[in-house]
Length: 284
Image (tube, rainbow, N blue to C red; front, top):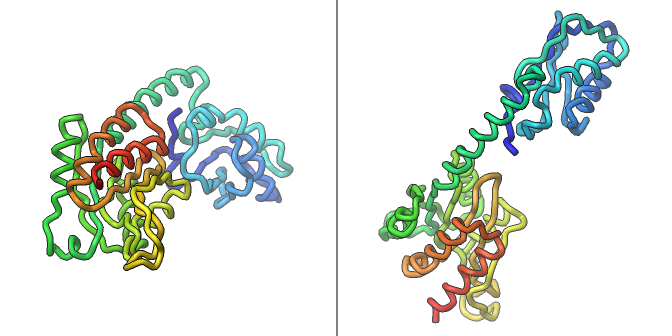
């Protein structure tokens, strides 16, 4: 089901509303009730002349839940003591006339499907590690991704390199997700050493990140401070997050499985498991 931005800055404008000692808290609660929103997320930010402006602390909602809800909203507001609706009207999709709802929803769904299809084909590759970020070594993983994923219909973009720093990785990944990349692949930083922070960073982006073990080590043996080398797969909104090892040979081994999983709609756990199976054979 398509989702929409409510209005600019998540504001809902209602015109034709006269107030006389009305309780703005009750007004906000009535608006939330009419739109099936959490009352804690709706506030009145402006009430003057003949309009009331509500601020909704939920930028995206399902279109079907608010499309054409003007009658319900106005009726609910009219029940608040001190509120008079004279010629009420609601800006945006909430005010869609009833005879246009089906057509509007159908058109929005079609646009949403096309947008999701386009976004799902956009891949950003982020490499981690100081040697890559400093340019001391050539980053060949983007080329590998383009060679393998390009023929399968994916548009691969080099998204730069970041240091082995959780905050830096989180910031880069979330920025790419906000820019409309349907897949963000990180390469590097999945090992058992203290400097390896990619899995931990992606867990901050998606607390339910699915991981699969490639190798196990005794903590404290050598430089190992974690018991496992892991790959990971997660989700942020429309964006799939995929954490792969850094060596290009391993990236090349895993990417055909990534392509298969994305095309066949595997869930995060299955994709992580299948990547790990291939990579464990590669490591042997």
